[in-house]
Amino acid sequence: MPRNSRPYLRLAAALALGPLLSGLVLARGFGALGDWRTLIFPYLWLYLFIEGRVRRQALSDGQVFLLGGAFSFIYDGLLTKRMQDSFSISGLDWVAVLGGPLEWGMAVVVWLHCLQALLPREDEPVALPGQGVVLAGVPVLMGVVYLWKSVFGHFRVEHFLGPMWLIDDVVLVGAAVWLWRRYRRSLREQTYQNPVGVWVFVGLGLWFLGSGLLAEASLGVPAPKVLAYTMETFWLVALGIFLWVTWRDRHTYSDEPVRRSRVVLAAAGFRVVGTLVLLKLFGATNDLRMAFWSGLLCDWPSKVLFYYAFLTSRLEV
Image (cartoon, rainbow, N blue to C red; front, side, top):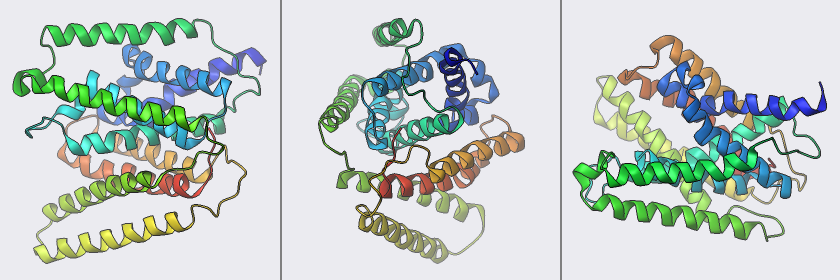
């Protein structure tokens, strides 16, 4: 193929894969692939932002994971308010606050590994025309939209949280800044390694997901509570073994970075195939069964595979 066509093919593949891997297509159907507003932000902007960073310095999966986590607090926290959809006193949905960075961090790393497998980046990546305008203009536009909705009360959370929503926004911005600063520090490190806090957050995220699936499965069949408690115990033991093994093996991997991890690609395959199967069975609906089956067929296997590779390998994006 002509040399100058590869950046555009990568961009087209990124805009098709992003909504599939992030779960947007599962929530909204294939129409999400044609929603230009969503494709511009977050997917087009996020892709161009990370590609611009990679052109200046090669990034590891841990560094990209930090970027995805910081972005989650801005997108899911400030703009869509998914992290403030709770009836708790603070208004913050703490499961979403803890899970959002894990979800976005994983999705972005898997996204870039898939692109490397399909269309490897050129040795000397080039900037796309208008890239600077998108990178500078879209955040300004999003800031204007946020201020407009905030001033005129367009966010639903403002009506049932009162002034607490603004405090929550400040907290979420602080979390995004903290992750961003951690990312900036990692650029000065000889080799970035995931701190112990990453194992803690991964454990919490997998525990929330597995416990939720077990709870829904227990509600779906008439069974004594002792069975649910037994399954939960086995899940905690299995998760503990998983985290212990990944912690034990964290220094045993090769120093040679892996740019196209088969395990990460398998995680992507579970997400894409599971999405297609569920859309075929249920369509893009609010069917209560969707949450259970999407967790079982998409989230759980893809997260276990990804986090195993993420915690025990040196991946490069």
